[in-house]
Length: 163
Image (cartoon, rainbow, N blue to C red; front, side, top):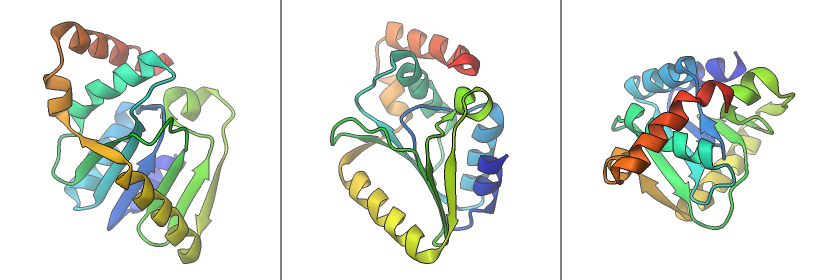
């Protein structure tokens, strides 16, 4: 519910960093609605995986988040394991929760939510540095892959409730 509310309250920007990004339908729809509202939605994912199934599933999600206001970046500056959220200029969350069902419903995760412009500015600066060390990707990155890769990504996406 926390993440649903954070996404719903975004008016200008919603930036998310998560090494394991396999959102359920509710979160996916909330992200799509934010983009439709005109929110700058940016999602930072790792280029180098440590969990192959989750990494594969994230490729299938590229096709589900096709919108001009959604930009997905793959971090190329090494292994990315941060979990952060920035909403507009006033609210940020940093913690252990990923954007996946295990973090939302099974694991004992914690996220520090801070409603402070100064802290949000520091998180925004961190995101800007990380976006500068990343490559923007979109659905073409999925569609250009071999059939076996696409089938594997779709299969991994089907497993997302348990990833």
